Image (cartoon, rainbow, N blue to C red; front, side, top):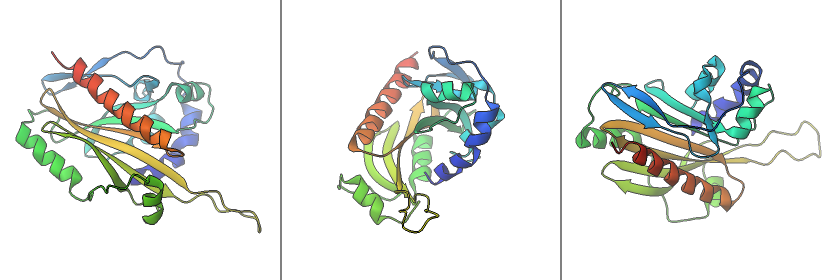
Length: 233
């Protein structure tokens, strides 16, 4: 979540350099992880921007994850893809990424290996509270610090949780003119053991109302279930 701030710095360059055709209907595709092929797809309403091969797209995607991860998919909304394709500045209100740890991508990941991976990723996250007033929780946290808001699902081969953060709005340059309001961001991270390979899926959205959190929960669940369905072979 802390990496979200880096997104703004590359948006202008990305809009200028990405001159790709508008996306066709999204279709599943395969990535090779060692001797295993994993089927991937974006949720409805998103397109895989990484498939354009644009260096600026890669720069934006890399700002969202650690260098120790290999990016498998970077999805932006179809509307933002169309904006990119004509050189307009995208809104980037919602986007997503799928990665795999480079240290594990070529190897069989046992349930014990996956358990250690989950423990490593979540070591410093903290525990979610029972308070469903996310805005109040984010207002109470230091600016820019991610807060674990909810654990969405936990199984032996899957852990999914929601985080949020608050970022300050732009300061006004004029006396008597109020600053822009704070910006709230939500994300989900799902650690998933899929065909004996470890994946991490993340979805990001701006947070203006409870409907944004509901959309995030539903889209996360739908994406995970679709990837599990695609890889039952």
